[in-house]
Amino acid sequence: MYFAPLLAQDAAATMDVSATLTQNILTTNNVWMMLSTALVFIMHLGFAGVEAGFGQAKNTVNILFKNTITPILGILTYAVAGFYLMYPGFETPGWFGFDASGWSMFWFSPGDADVTADYADAGYTYWTDFLFQAMFAATAATIVSGAIAERVKLWAYLVFTLFFVGIVYPIIGSWKWGGGALDAMGFYDFAGSTLVHSVGGWGALAGVILVGPRIGKYVNGKTVDKPGASVPLAVIGVFLLWLGWFGFNGGSVLSADPALVSFVLVTTCLAACAGGMGGFLAGYYVFKRLDLGMVLNGVLAGLVGITAGADVINPGSAVIVGFIAGILVVLSAVLLDRLKLDDVVGAVSVHLTCGVWGTLAVGIFSTNPEHSFITQLIGVLICGATAFISAFIIFYVLKVTVGIRVSEEHEKSGLDSHEHGIRGYTIVYDE
Image 1: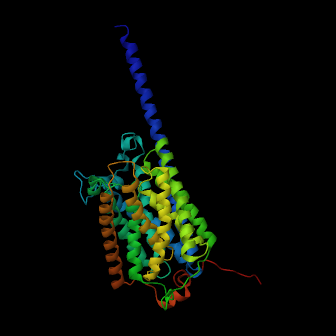
Image 2 (image 1 turned 135 degrees about the vertical axis):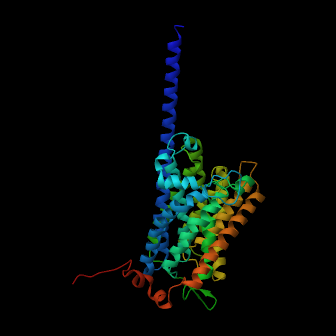
């Protein structure tokens, strides 16, 4: 009887310690997730650098304008519709859903949002969840921007972004990350080789086909190089993307688990290095020169390739995945030129070709015996067909209504002067 108060005090103290520990775990995890969100956000600066660096000087402002407005439009669109399409709360695995209660809470009763350890097993809060996923969504449209640069109408691109990021991307994402039909099938895509990168790549391919090549790109069966405005800017852009990928893949652990996060960062970095080496060697073999562009795209190819399986592919296998991706990006670029498909920055080769390869690689190299090559292939085909057909329809409707290509005069003289009234590079001499 005399010990009862003491036992009650001990129980209360234990509960207090447990609550404090849980809160500390939530704080640690959430800080890492917010840092990862910031790293993914920095990737937009990387995309801008790569695209402006590889693009012609006369279109620099236009390119930077698109890369500035894309995350703005993408995040707003994801907040309006995408988040609730991507995570619809399927009662049974399906192909389409919408979380109407989540939408209502987000806009009309945000105080009801779960910011406790009960949300996501103390991995992060509701708001961190939204912002991290919104950054992913915006990157899908950015991929398209680089491929069709220098000849697409700005307004047509913005309308495409509204539909592709706001509807197409989140619906496809819901099939795996939202607990939909592909997830139930056993399809695996850790951080988005298919769900982000190849989806964006399929959109880019549809755009490249419908908008057509730049004037003078293919003449008498030969490919004419159009020198980029700034090689240093392109290099800076690639390194910013490489940095951002630590958040892209590392944040996809969805907690600050030290063992898994560190493992993912190692496989990610090794694949990037191997991809750069693959691009270097393949570029030298094909073009008989030390091609910096192919090394840069090789790095990005390796990063895209490992993204689907960064948590289930061992370091040695990650090197193989990255190296093959680096070779594939060169061969894909050559093939596209032979088909007269003009991709300014190599977005289709990097994100589509290597996104498909990386997703299939899970079925080859994964340490999880439940991952199947056939299942991965089925997932790639379903996502690819949906993304390409949807993007093609959006671009085609725009093409036959408002048009998607600028005039020949504007393209030849540059989009900066005609659409923006300023140039990206201006030298002024004081008298």
